[in-house]
Structure formats: C-alpha cells, structure tokens
Length: 126
Image 1 (cartoon, rainbow, N blue to C red):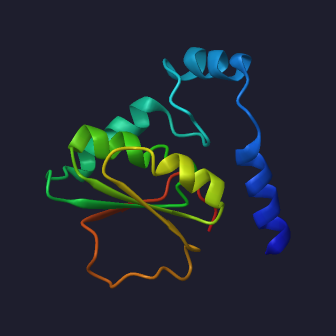
Image 2 (image 1 turned 135 degrees about the horizontal axis):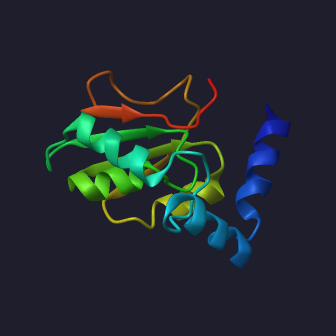
C-alpha cells in the first residue's frame, strides 16, 4: 500500500499544465480541476438523483482534489466530507466552502453508520 500512496501523492503534486486545462475544457465543457473521469453532466445528474437538502451532509469517498463531490455539494448547497489517502489532494479539496477533509481509506472509514445523507465515490476502484 505504501507504493500506492506514493504514486497518488506524486500524481496530485504534479502541476496541471495549461494544455491539460484546455483539454478538460474541450472534453468536459469547462475546467473543473478534474482528477477523474466524471463529466460535468454526470456530476449534475448525480446531484439531481441525490436530491440533497441544504441541511444534508454528503460523503465523497476517494475524493482526490474534490471532484465531483465539491460540484455536487455546491449545486445542492450542502456540507461535504471529502475522504482520500493523499493528503496533498485533500488540502486542495478542503479549500472548497463547506468542505471537511479526512484522510482515511475507503475500507476503514472513521464514521458512525448514520453520519451522512448520501455517499458518492466516482472514479474509485474498490
């Protein structure tokens, strides 16, 4: 697991090139700081299906830098808890308003069973 952590830490440390942002704009319609494969339309569809209240708390497992959980929580106006292993990615995720970042593995989450109103885990291999 240590090798995997190092790989993901280095992935998020790499600076995003201007060309990468342009590709994201062309492929997805906007630059959102993508670190996965969920499109803007897919994130908005998730938000519609979740139908979250503003008082809700959303858990994003394997959040990376926060996409798409941050987009969903902004659209719904709810709180977000971002969970992942690479701390530097979580540092970026927690810059989003209303977001709490927790370093944990998806298989051993440090929460009670009824802590969240919804959970997303887009682009996560379990």
